[in-house]
Length: 153
Image (cartoon, rainbow, N blue to C red):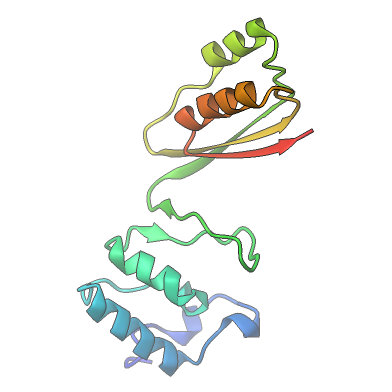
């Protein structure tokens, strides 16, 4: 256990398909630490289930960025929230920005950003039938939130 750099007893439970051999993992961690000049940074115990890209991001950030594990979907990029930040999720639907008063209301009423928060907006439903207005409305959301997800409705 000492040579691995972490205790196997502390490892969380992962599906077997996500785990690599602990000795293989230790060698991978050492290689990436060396590449990133991060030999002084220890990975968390759950890093045994991380991808090589997630390990690189962790060490390149100085140990500040941890991978999100909400859902594992092949081919879908994972956005890493910087360590120490908390996520806030806001949902808005049916903005109907074709009506100028609705668009103005949305611009004035978006919640303020907060230090230490990673803000996500889920925008659902009818925004506009006009592609230019849709782009403008989503641009307003994108300027305010760290991440915006849109699904037409």
